[in-house]
Amino acid sequence: MRKPTFSPTKINTYLLCRVKYHWAYLTPYGRWMRRPNPAFTFGANLHRALEYFHNAGGAEQLSPEAFHQAFERLWRDAGFETAQQSEQFKQAGLELAQRYYQTHAEQPPEAAVLFTERALRRDMGRYILTGRIDRVDEHPDGALEIIDYKSGRADVSEAQVRNDLALHCYALLLQEHYPDRPLRIALYALRANKKVAVEVSPESLDEFRQMLNQLVGQILDEDWEILTPRWIDPCAACEFLNLCVSKLGLAKDASQ
Ligand code: SF4
Image (cartoon, rainbow, N blue to C red; front, side):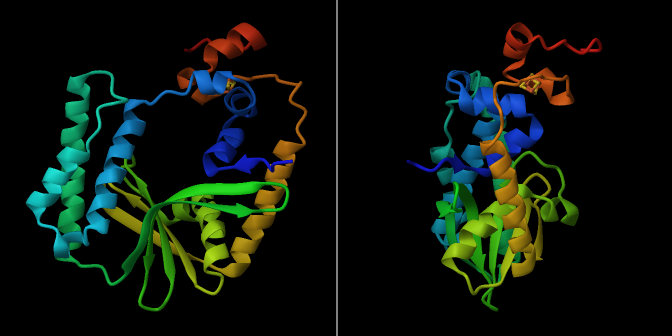
């Protein structure tokens, strides 16, 4: 029998709301209601541009004009509601990308890019852990740094990096391929053009692995017949709100 797969997005959905996890991953509604939204599409466009930037050799090899042209060429409209909305997002994205370019031109990083935008998987026993890593840098001391771009965040703190479930999942994925390398995890808030990185010790990663195995075990052993949604803040913007109200009797918050 094929083992179930778990990505950080899937696990975070469960942590946010188990009823949402049920709709999204255990019923056909998840597929029917999955549609690109402007914020997601904006992030995907930026990721594509930054991937191109690094694969082309960064600011040392690529002129600002060539990067600008590539940004325009790589931009996709699909996922935006109107052409005008796409254009607004494109201008905002171009500004972020140009600032990113400028920072790399002014302070050439010591680390070399090992790879960008790579999907990895790891057999965790009862399940397969999967994830797509935005970028991994290799530092002169041999340490590998996993970088996750955040296109919507205005800032990022060390605590947010330390508590980021997706980054720790990526560290587990990378650890399998580079078991002897020291690992760092980092969030790069593109709006603030700010990156915060912290080290992940083998001990703390092992602790995370045990916690993750317990959590995924709990998801796999859940009784999905019992679904009693309660109103939480994310309900207001949830794509499954109507289903929760009509099929599971969720009472809308009076203040909404
Ligand atoms: S509407 Fe609320 S309770 Fe229902 S799935 Fe969404 S977040 Fe969960």
